[in-house]
Image (cartoon, rainbow, N blue to C red):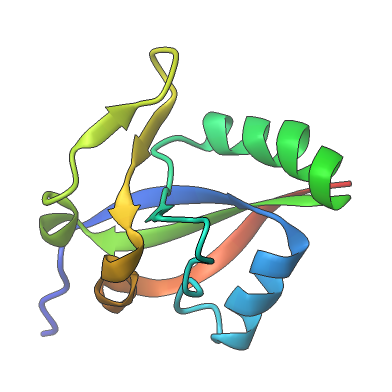
Length: 117
């Protein structure tokens, strides 16, 4: 029997360019951050991700996507939950230089669950 790690579901709003890069990585990793992006921030609830994709990505990129993926919960415990606004606006802040290690702890694939145009 395979012993799989306990996982946490995360969401990430993304624009078309970032989603293309995820596709190129076979839906298994997030691309490196740009120099002006010192952190990678997945969010802890779908509603918050929908609001960003629909209200920000569409306005700035013409389309917005909400992705869902699983990450090893034990690994995630190193990142405190950040409340970025209201009670349900919760994020994890992963330093850009730790993104490769973060990607190694994704369990399964990254999937698109919503699309907005």
